[in-house]
Image (cartoon, rainbow, N blue to C red; front, side, top):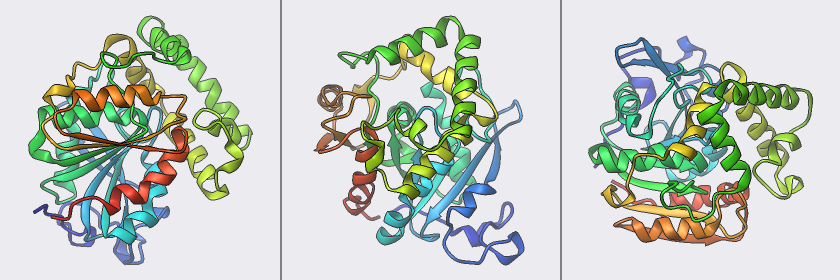
Amino acid sequence: MTHSTPARERPNGTDTLSPEAGGSGAAPTAADAEDPRTVEYGTAGRRLAYGECGTPDGDPVVFLHGTPGSRRLGVLVDDAARAAGIRVLAPDRPGFGRSTDWSGRRPTDAPAWVEPLLADAGVERARVLAFSGGAADALALGATRPDLVDRIDLVSGAAPPSVAAATPRLQRLLGRLAATTPRLLGAILRGQTRLAERTGPSTVLAQYTDDPGQIPADAAELVRADFLEALGRSRDGAVTELAWIAEGWGVSPADVTVPVRLWHGGGDANVPVEDAERLRDRLPDAELTVLDGDHLTTLLDARSRAFDTAPRG
């Protein structure tokens, strides 16, 4: 059985749910993404920021955002998590949002920041729900530290370059830029961030869905806020992870020893469903559910399904 210490009972750090911390004592909401907790890890003074949502004393799930992304995207699963009795821990992965940069980070470094995150939250083990590029860290955890992970759910999850049959052209270009001219890519991302600041959500949504108009207004604005948070302070996380497209992940799906459930859209242009099928076939214990959607709409559709089918401790 997993162990989860409710946020209000944590002995180590500010109580984000207490009245003294400005909270109401209720379950975390979008407001908690504004003032995340931080935990120091490693020997270089690095800090990891994370927010919470869902049910404070529920079964713990670590939500890993995409590339780029931030803890803010975790709020998108808040209602579904509450309904299922899930406590969501949503970190800014290194180099994104308010977490410290870690140039040269690899997927296999994930335990170095996930284990301190769990310890700070009073959690021994957790399930992992990863969206898009967050799949790299999720699978690395399942391969290198299965003692920390009960199960992995990949929603619109990227496939390792060693598995992907046909990486979309734009992603190949971004991977080459990240590996060969990272400063140029950083400047491009900075320009995209400034454009997103001046325009509405559709500018950001176009990167994730073929039909931005079908995304509910609140979800659309949340995705925009997530993008701005991800790249507003630094582009290092995105550049580092995009380089993995060219350099590989250093993770073999065959080494993942925990159950993996894949939720993928049949119309996903960012990660073709054929890559999800290939990944499923290479994982020792995996199931694939194909939904009628694209990259982003699959996340909206699968958020409650993934929680509903998750085994309770």
